[in-house]
Image (cartoon, chains in turn brown, orange):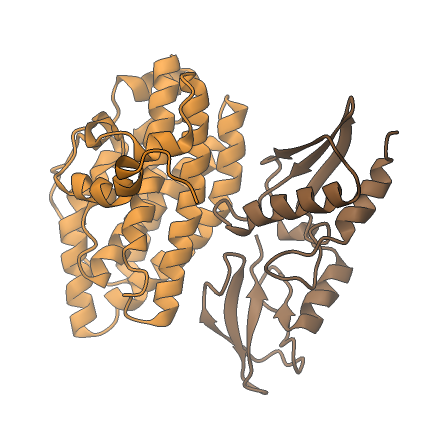
Length: 151
Length: 250
């Protein structure tokens, strides 16, 4: 019996990102395509940053989730083009990031402090705890926060 | 032609791999926590890119070698990286200046490669150029801050520039394989990247109040596998585990 790809998308909606578990891997736009190649389920996955160590964990999580749903024949393909962009993070996922304390990506740096909403911000470090983040601080509430870099 | 393609991939992958390893040496030792994190992240980006380039090199070569095989099981004379990236880290000024001179060239190269006739190369370049544009933004900013900083930071940045300038020249010297790759539309001719590099580098150095060195001497040979003694020490550390325990995994 062939499982509809919509069902597989729904399953993958439930797989959290290993570094930022408040969003799913589909929220981040990491899963690019789901299709059947004869009786093999093919999942096209794109890396966020070339060297992001979470990529291997994400692949393992996808495989574990789908095996748990009874998928037997499975192939994961890396898809580099078009390259991953933070534009693929939807508005719902952006709201989840904000609620989690991470300022979502925007063209000219973080728009507002995810804690108090102030726009008076300063950059502490161009890189943060993961390749996709930078560190900022709010000059009003004085809280430091992560910013999801825009690429 | 297949030779030119393979050589191009090894050169591009080896630059990223060796510079990544050099930057990793700062992990836990950088002068400030933010700098430590920044260098480790830059190293990680470059390592990821090296993996993509070397994996493709292995596929093009067609002898079943993986990216790991190429990284861990080649000797120094088989590496094709620029001599600049194997330079010892020196002080933090030297590390940053090397990064800046490299980033400016790397960015120009990758931007051009996004239109390579080889779609696999264009795909990797389109991904990597976004990461490298962030690297260049950071390194150029720091070169200005430190060059136009205190007397001591200015002195160190000028010394770093004077030392590294003659190594940067290797980026723009073509050999027959570069010419063949350019003719096939795979990669740009090295000298064609010079104007873009000059624009970024000369503007930044001016803002940093640093004097452009007058020497025209160029250290060459890295791209052909003739390296300084420093590369052997890098490989000794990087390859030790796979050499001592072949095939070890975890």
